[in-house]
Amino acid sequence: MFKSIKALAVFLGTIIGVGIFGLPYVASKIGFIPIVFYFVFMSIVVISMHFLFSRVILGTEKLHRMPGYVGEYLGSNWKKFSLLVFSFGLIGALLAYLIVGGEFLNFLLSPIFGGNATLYTSLFFLIGSIFIFRGIKNISGIELSLLIAFFVILGVFFMKALPFINFEYLQTIDLEYLFFPYGVVFFSLGGLAILPEIKEMLANYNQERELRKVIVSGILLATVSYLFFIFIILGSCGSLVSKEAMYGFANILGDNIAGLGFIFGIITCFTSFLTLGLTLKKVFWYDLNIPKHISWFIACFLPFLFFLLGFREFIDIIGLTGAIALGIDGIFIVFIYREFLKRKKIKKINPLVYCLPIFFILGIAFEIFYFILR
Image (cartoon, rainbow, N blue to C red; front, side, top):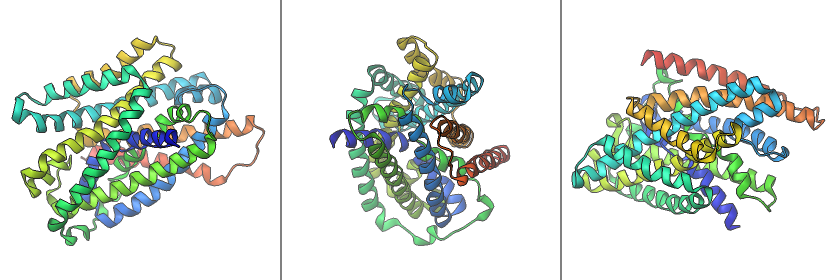
């Protein structure tokens, strides 16, 4: 039982990350009611993706990461393309965690110790890299503790914000921005990359049943948490919502909430940075056969290098990463699943599964369109 709870903590800690801080901003553009429908629909899509991928993982003897499964079922050429896309997605996510996590650390500590955002991003990166070097056993314990803190702080936010919430802010709808939230919402629900790790953590259990429970529980808990967070921030800030959410929230509620808000931001970014950093390390290690310590170095230092080169607009990063990288991964999953069923001599496949690639292709097109317009 405790193993399942730790597995859920790692899965949920991976999902709930930097994406949460972009959600109030995109919700402020389209409106609270449409974003609720967005999450209901996208939760169904994402759970379906995870179920398909989990079945492949459980039914394949050798443990891979996404590019490895693509290579096994679709061939080496597709594996190379998948490796490029999968790495792009993880690097983009890790870069976003560095940007926002370092910014929150800067807001919290620079008034006391001085320094700037680059210094505190470097500190965030250094601490996270040490945990990634040590591996999943150390990460699973810290994920559970940090998630408990996450939910406690979310409850405090609600109590503090309640007197400031204006329901008129939640009634505005602007369908001009109908497709604007897609990439950010998709990114905020993504947990595919960590599923092989969850399988390892659930060894000696009824893995199929437990993995499905972890997937459904994790995505639904993340969805409810996101909508609750959007309700709090958008309801209290209205049009004054800032891109990273917490700065505008602190301006409305005052300095008393600012420190807690920045701690909240650091926790959510740090948990996901650990799990996805570990996943990227294992992609290089297992799927490219790069030595373990070199894989760790590349996985951790490459996102940091992009940060130093000036890639620091996190809404654009998570939007493009969500739509393009996760969308292409979703397309791969459908065709991997089809080949998996063929090998198992299972001819029946739900025709609705083939609607997913069309949906993901349209999502990629709309996200690129909005990126060009921004």
